[in-house]
Image 1 (spheres, rainbow, N blue to C red):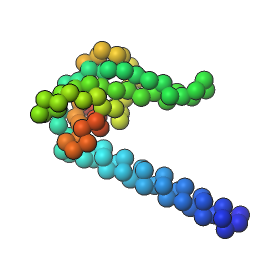
Image 2 (image 1 turned 180 degrees about the vertical axis):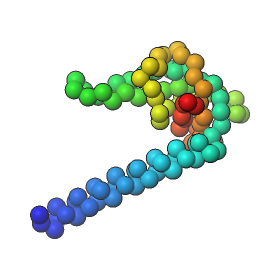
Image 3 (image 1 turned 90 degrees about the vertical axis):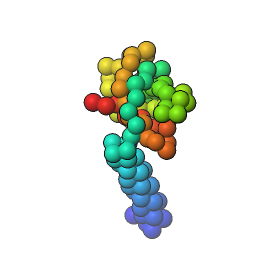
Length: 102
């Protein structure tokens, strides 16, 4: 393996590690400081191809100050349906980041 390939792989691994760290940090912040509310599943999309399942689940809810937002669920379940009412926590600063309350 030449030096250029090693640097590219090292950069790729570093980027993956940073994304993983940020994701875990956001999850922890929502669990510790998240604001609970009721939302409705607004849409479910499948970003995967014919051989992959990669769905995104969006929820619409009102924040503490009355703003209506549509956020993405970071922990969707496969049994969710559009129009379904769910209990969530959302990040107080990043209001479009939400998690289901299990």
